Structure formats: C-alpha cells, structure tokens
Amino acid sequence: MEALVHPIVEAIKLAVTRIPDDTVSALRRAYESEESKVARFNLGNILMAIEIGRDRSIPVCQDTGTMTFFVRAGVESPHLGKIEAAVLEAVKKATIEVPLRPNSVDVLTGRNSGDNTGKEVPIIHWELTRGDEVEVAVFPKGGGSENCSALAMLTPAEGWEGVKRFVLERVMECGGKPCPPVVLGVGVGGSADHSLKLAKKALLRRIGERNSDDRIAELEEELLEEVNSLGIGPMGMGGKTTALDVKIEVAHRHPASFPVGLAVQCWANRRAFIRIKADGRVELWQ
Amino acid sequence: MAVKLKTPLRVEDVLNLRAGEVVYLSGPIYTARDSAHRKILRLAEKGELPFNIEGAVIYHCGPVVRRKDEDWGIVSAGPTTSARMNPYLDDILSLGVRGIIGKGGMEVEPFKGRAVYLAFTGGAGSLAAESVKRVVDVYWLEELGIPEAVWVLEVEDFPLLVAIDSRGNSLYR
Image (tube, rainbow over all chains, first blue to last red; front, side, top):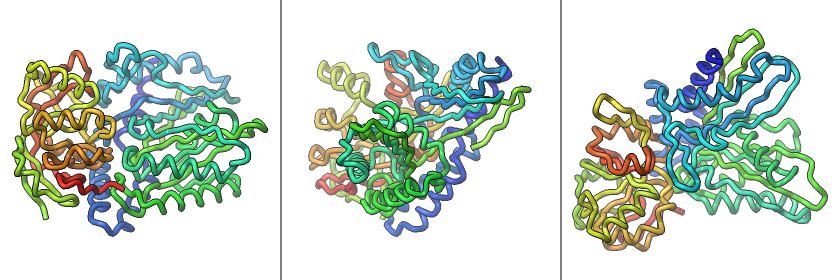
C-alpha cells in the first residue's frame, strides 16, 4: 500500500500548489480583457498568487478544500483493494507535508479532526471500469464555491430555458462569494443526486474542452456568454469575466422530472490525476 | 491613490476612505470566522475578551499554518466569504472594530459612520501570506481548530481595496 500512498500525496500537492495551465491561460486572457482598475487589481493578484504557489510549492488558496476523489477502478487491477486505505493515508500525510488546512469538522460537536479525515471524508466517488488500471482524480473543493452549488427540480415544461434561468439566477445571487471568475458544472437529468454528481464530475474537464455532443456544446457556449453578460466580474466587483467556462453533462431523465445540479468551482480550478498501472508504474498529470 | 494605515485604527482613519481606493495596512490584525465571532461576542458581553478589540481590524480568514519549532508560520492566508458573518456584523462593529477584511462583500448599512470593509482577492492566499510578517499570538486553537481559531497576525503593507466605505458606497454589484 505504501507504494500507492506516495503518488497520491504528490498528486494532492500538485493540485493545491499548481493551478492547471488551461486555467492560468484563461485567467491571463481575462486579465488582458479587463479595463477597470478594480478587476485588474483582483486578476493581477490571482496571477501573482499562482506564481508564488508554483515557485514555492505552497497552497495557492488557504482553503485547500474538502478532499474529493473520483476513482475509475479497473476491476482487474491488482491494486484495487488497497486504493481506499491508500487515499485515506495520503490525505493524512498531505495534511502535514504539503501542508493542507485541516477542513474536516464533526457535524454535532464542531470539533476539527485535524487531519482532513472523518466520517465519509475524504469523499471518494467510485466507478468500476474494465481493465487493470486505476485512475484517481484528486479534486480539492473549497467551501466558498461549494456553498453556491445548488439543485433545482424543474418541471419538464420549464426545460432548457429553465436550466438557463436557474443557473443565471443562482450565479447572480452568489455574486462574489464563490471567488469568480468561476467554472460552472451543470448536470442535467438522471435524478436529484445524479445531476449533482454529473455537475461536479464535469468540472474535471479542461477549460475550453466542450461536451462531445455538439448540441450540448452549443448550450455550454450560450450559457457561458450569458453568465459573462451579468457583469459580476472578478470577486463580484464588476467586470467582463464572471465565468471561465461552463461544462454541461447530461443523463436521460424520468418523464416527470427535469433535475439540474449546479456545481460552482472557484478560479483556483484545482485538479490532478494519477493512473496506476497493473505493474505499479504511476503517471501523474493535470 | 494609495493610503497607508496602521492598526489599531481610529475612527478618523476610516471615515475619509472611499470605495475603490487601495489601502496598505500594517500592524496586528485578528483572524475570525463563524465560531470565533460567536465566541468574541459572548466573551465581550461578559467583559472577558482576552484582547483589546477597540480599533481592531478583523480578517475573515482561516490560514494554512506550519509549526516552526516553538512558533507558527503562515503558509497561505487569503480571505474567506464574509457574507457568512453578516449576522454578527452590527454587534462586532459596536465593539469598536474599525475594519473588516474579507471577500465577497457584506451588508452595507452597519458600516455607515464607523468602519470600512476592505477586500482582498479570494483564493490568493499565497500572495496574502507575503504581507504577514509573523504570528503574534493565537487564541482558542485547541477548542476551535486551525481554520476557526483567532490568529493575531502582524501584517506589513497588506494591499487592500476599500470595497465598502463608511458612507455606504460599495463596489459589489
């Protein structure tokens, strides 16, 4: 198991200290497009913070989040049985070594566990796949943006227009709270819980990477444009860039239901991936 | 135009600040989040607050810290979402707090005539930590845990935007 812990710690460290290149490029474009002094103050600070995090290997944002993992586990992987324990151990180690902020609190007593573990935490989403490889996506999710996530159970009559209205209203209501420019994950269909999970999983995609279905891709672009026309801007102080991207994932729905899950991600669009091969070799990327 | 200020702040320090101005703040500031606000208000009512809050600046922040021998080092220390602290705002400002540092904005009304809201860029914790020279003290660490404890941070030329001024002007939309 120890051989698996180290690469997971490395992935956690990468995720919190280095903002992915696609996100940095999008933030640079946003900086160049903004004219107001206030928007440039905020985007300039963001770009400096990213550099400091990368150069000194320290967390860019102090809210290193709830440690969340999406695991695609090949059923023939010899490592399958060890992944969960390795993730847990890696989170404890990373809390001290990176370091991370301890963000796991008992719901009844409010007591902080001190090591980012606890009941049901870290959060691990499992998906079983064929083959003998295991892919782990590290997805540290900050509280400020997570608090803006939401679910709407629309009527089928409200449909896609309802989806847009719900997303725009929610983004408007949240203003500067989720640290815009944000990335929005929208899950449509399935069930209440499934739409939220799809929304969060959509955030693992790169900035600019569209849904493979052209019709959905078009909706992503439309919604992105509409969100950016709201004028909320960086940190909610006005500007052209409110969202860096919108990602939509869909599932078939019940004829009576039209669930929409919204997962809001802050500008520090943190993620890292590792692939563990059957022979134990590990690949790491963002 | 940039203004240099040193804590503790006097009321006249803040009354002339205007939304949109940049302030470079130096001196001790106090981090406080949800639980710390409740505790501060409870103890202040009983006259048992272990620090002087008159003229203080409160920072909505839960830092990443590292133990260095006997001392604490601040690794990353950006602001948390201030709106969560709206329910305590009026009472906190009534204690003589002259400035709140945070992100995302707050209710405007309580600031009028007595205090300012200073914004730092959310998520830019590694940059904010550059302005922190040392940890002066920490209160209630054992009870509240690292993110919720009150960290007394000595800052130097911390660059902040006046986002809500004492006349009720706000940069938030």
